[in-house]
Image: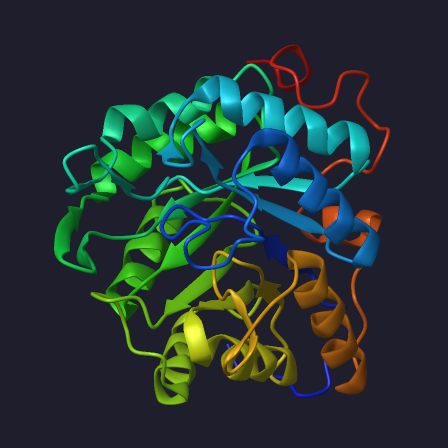
Length: 309
């Protein structure tokens, strides 16, 4: 795909409010409990965000894989943010145990996200295996093609759209192989994850290489963390991509200044998008770009019955 500085397409703006790594020790405004997460998404929806990227926590604020907590948050978003695209991160994250060690989540726990009582519009696919490091811990993040075949096939059966999270250029090759096999179909939606410890560095040179490797009809965005988040996501907008922001990716508004809320980051993103000569996609436009039914088209949006699961 060639970068496009003057695209006709509007920008799909994703907000990642919580994440599966740091908590309120990083920023006391980070939402952890279900009602706080729903309220944060509602504020971001009002500010212009079109996709809700969801992670949840337990009562102690630790990253959780509990389908019931996810279902409650998704239901709350659907009720209070009509039409907002709900997207659950399949990697889930990591959590600190009582003895101070860190642990990841099993493939069984990740596959169980398919069986939530309230079905999200999207689930992410982690496009390849790599070693992920966080603080004093290192994990093998196992995302084999065999496992992803099963996961993507199950998503299709439930009417769930996938976003493909790539941490390395080989992960693009993995996804293109699954497309050639017929496992992935239609427009491919990529997230280039840059600056994660164990993945590709937060360097614009890698972005050019990744763009060159994806099909021309793809949609894409950058996910980056910390100080590289704003420059790289703004660069994506300049080059025809979509944009993501939120406390999962950065808890700062600028260097040395914590952000007040996720909504503050969304408001800035909207300003940047418009100052760069583009506009933010509406809910219906974002849903159409993801080949989803428009708002109100399903009698029971988000239930298993509605998607035939």
